[in-house]
Amino acid sequence: MTEQKVLFADPLRVINIGLELFAEDLKAAGVEVVHVNWRPPSGANPRLAALLASLEDDE
Amino acid sequence: MPTKSEVLPSFYQDSVVLMQIAGQIRTRPGVRQAAVFMGTPANHALLGDAGLATQESLKARPEDLILTVDAETDAEAASALAAARELLVARRQAVERSGALRPRTLDSALRMLPGANLVAISVPGPYAKAEAMRALKRGRHVFLFSDNVPVQDEVDLKQEAWKRRLLCMGPDCGTAYLNGTGIGFYNVVPKGRIGCVAASGTGLQAVASRLAALGEGLSHGIGVGGRDLSAEVGGTMTLLALEALALDPATDAVVLISKPPHHDVMLRLDAALQRIPKPTVVCCLGATSPGQGRARWVGELDAAADAVVAAVRGQDWSPRPFSDPDDVRRRIGRLRELGPMAASGILGLFTGGTLAHEAHLILKDLLKGVIFNRRSGGEGICHRLLDLGADEYTVGRPHPMIDPQVRIDLIREAGRSPHVGVLLLDLVLGRGAHPNPAAPLVAAIQQARQTAEAGGRRLAAVASVVGTTLDPQGLSAQRTQLRDGGVEILPTNGEAARFAALIVKPDLGLSLLEARR
View 1 (cartoon, rainbow over the protein chains, first blue to last red):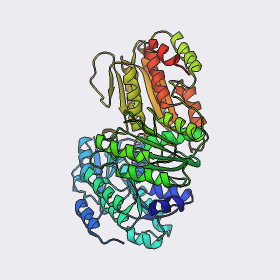
View 2 (cartoon, rainbow over the protein chains, first blue to last red; view 1 turned 135 degrees about the vertical axis):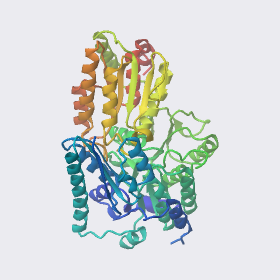
View 3 (cartoon, rainbow over the protein chains, first blue to last red; view 1 turned 30 degrees about the vertical axis):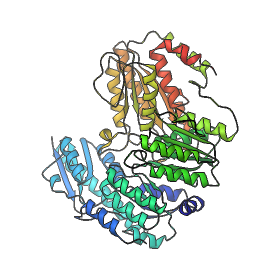
View 4 (cartoon, helix red, strand yellow; view 1 turned 60 degrees about the vertical axis):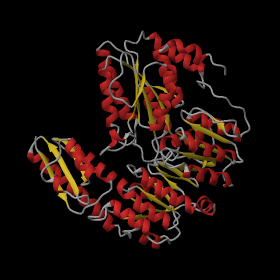
């Protein structure tokens, strides 16, 4: 349960991918946030992208 | 009918920005319809269905942006397209001018904020798994707002999260509160001592708002998505979240809100509930307790909040149909003095899916002929409840909590219906919701009433408000607008449903109003 304890005890620090509205809202609430300038991978099949992400090495 | 399109190649904007721009274009002179979409297969289908597909729009790829305008004249269509293009380009330039470093990938974002502990994801559903899986593999919890994520993707993501003891909140997770901070669509509530696990957004919003009204707050509110307790997903995130709240020193009591779990999941859930050494309240709408466990099971969202508050304060509590039966008796009496209702059907138009589901469960026990989420059908007197946040109403348009148009159209239609006597409504406030949702609602109700009265009928409107005094819309200002607009406001969604039932079936009064206090 270490991870949940960390999430619950520490201030929230967020990477936001998608709706910029959420990043703006978190920023306004004083949360440290980095917004990713995401766009759909050009010409890529989403299924293939998901498969590749699943096969990536762990951190 | 001039319908004109323009495609901006490799030009991405998120759906909220696109909807805002489409909304601005619709207000231009001569414009009948405007659509600003990415060229995904789903959006092409939508444009086709709406009769807005053109030779030009059909060329757009998923990464291209389509602008389509249907206007009175060619000149007005061309001018509206130009205005849309200018708005998009201006927005992009403003972002570039701001000088903020905008990483293109999760990994580069993590280099900028290595201490990040949560990744919030709201990309289109088909792309959600790749981003969420990557975040989990980097050891971060995930808040997954995206909808239309295939169930197998959800299973894969949650298995990965379970393995790593990480939370994957969602898909289709509208609301969460972590350590006092709200994410997604949420009501502004104080930080407090009650932890909540909820399948859905509005269920969590209703409980959080009620807790705030009772002078309590949330330690954490963990959304898990509506399918978590299904057989396929197996309740993994609900179980993990309950375990985390059980161990969390800031949490004194726990509330679980969900739809009925699958039978196999129920057994695991019940075992997990037994292990929580804190007061625990469960509201699985439509399900009853599987046994004599430690947790207290209640039937309604607000009852869950009331019961858990009583538990942490060491007070007795039992459910009641109305918190103030005398007031209800007076109000029902006043409505009856206006004369008999010419039509006795209830039409429930909800922006919150869980609120719609809850009202359905209450009304089907009180009245005959209650139908849920079907726009047509039903013989004779029937009562119809619609969840306007369901996919069929939201494809290509904002959720009705943001854009009231779908509900406005249905309220106006109700004014013309010889069957509808009562409108049953919810009003959800909070971050992300419409800035003043009571105003368009009251305007539509008044219009529908005029139409009904011209036809010799009366139309009553009954509502409850999910919101807090800290919400940007202002709870009391919204309530005042509704009240001044002739809407009967009840303190909870459950009471509003029962009040609507009392209007159309007065003989229920004996069982509902005389219930022991």
